Length: 114
Image (cartoon, rainbow, N blue to C red; front, side, top):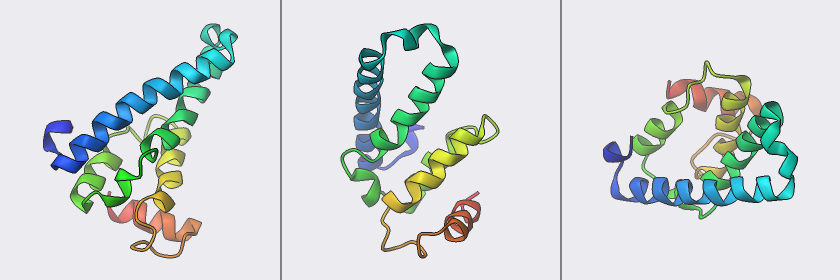
């Protein structure tokens, strides 16, 4: 995906990957038993994504073309958790451009780019 993003999108992608590593290490350090528990690890790993995606605020300045590529990257068939992450990111992506932050507004935005 990275090579198809604008320069700022590539920067966001690189910074997000680094931040995900930091967040995952913090998660493991906070609960060493998590490594032996796949369900707990998966839930914790998913919980690190939204903070990492929005960590430096860059995502709020990406062009729509990059946002569409990013939101299409996860496999939404994977789980409800993956879809939930997309919904949680909506208010963090240039909220002044989006409809009022509500579940119907979020779903309208999400399905309009699919």
